[in-house]
Image (cartoon, rainbow, N blue to C red; front, side, top):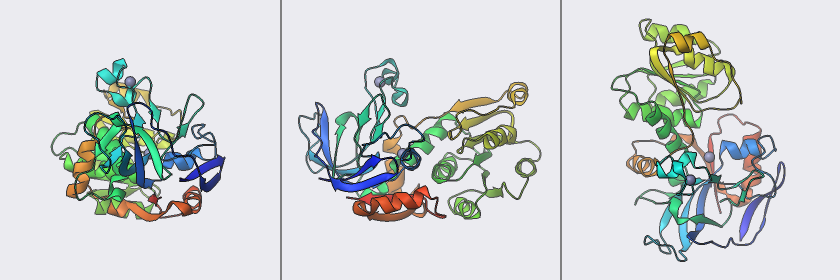
Amino acid sequence: MKALVLKDYLKLNYEEAPIPEPGAGEVLVAVKACGICGSDVHGMDGSTGRRQPPIIMGHEAAGVIAEAGNAANGWKRGDRVTFDSTIFCGECAFCRRGQINLCDNRRVLGVSCGDYRRQGAFAEYVAVPERVLCRLPEGLSFEQAAMVEPVSIALHAVRRSPPVLNDTAVVVGVGMIGLFVIQALRLAGCGKIIAVDVVPDKLRLAQELGASHTVNASAEDVLACVQGLTRGFGADLAVEAVGMPQTVEMAVRCVRKGGSVTLVGNVSPRVELPLQIAVTRELTLYGSCASSGEYPTALDLLVRGAVNAAPILSAVAPLADGAAWFDRLYRKEAGLLKVILKP
Ligand SMILES: [Zn+2]
Ligand SMILES: [Zn+2]
């Protein structure tokens, strides 16, 4: 089969690779679309240590079952599927509690981090355990389905910080995850949704996708804007989708007494916390990692158009051109959000 292989750091090659052998309980999926994730772009230069070459990256994919093997549960050749990027064991204490994103034996497709190497979906075929498969609803394209992972991450973050009807929410950072968080907060019944970023184009998109107000943090005083929009009260909740010291601090300062901050971004491994604010204002901090069972809901919202992924999809390109698209994303070309590659 053809695959896009990370041969060395920053060196992607479109070349022949062996078709993966599905193991017990696994199926072989013929990949029809696979999204380039920020973690692939960050990882391919070695900075995260999670894409050690040689590796076929890619974990945001959809396709058709090519070989169902001895899969149970009625999966058969030709079924249109997507799959959870996190391969969970189904047996550890966390899986048994339904917290599959916290699985003790969690492996991510298309990742090699020293502990394991699991070939991903920038290839014609990928082997995945049937446990993580999700059937595609009729009418949902493979390209739309390849965007289900970031939608699920946003749904999970909103579920962690459950807003109540008419709450005011601040979303700090409106990249792809932030843009889906805004849509999920809207669906969850938030009243005001205040989007904060430093890129005007992203703020425009945030407004198009449901933010009621936007604040450009490089030109405006974010805290003053939030106070002004809430009559000095502060927001009920904030979702932080960047993960840097200044943005985490901003999220913490934006919320009212007794409010909550959900932390999704984690660019910096460490940040300083305004401890006295968190303590004396009785804030609740939630960490939110990946997703845990939100895939079917995300697929349903996508196919019904309740979540709009179209403005976030920047380009669909052949897998053979993958290296060039990775390069453009790596150089942070303005306006590029999600790029999907098709084998
Ligand atoms: Zn991803
Ligand atoms: Zn587990």
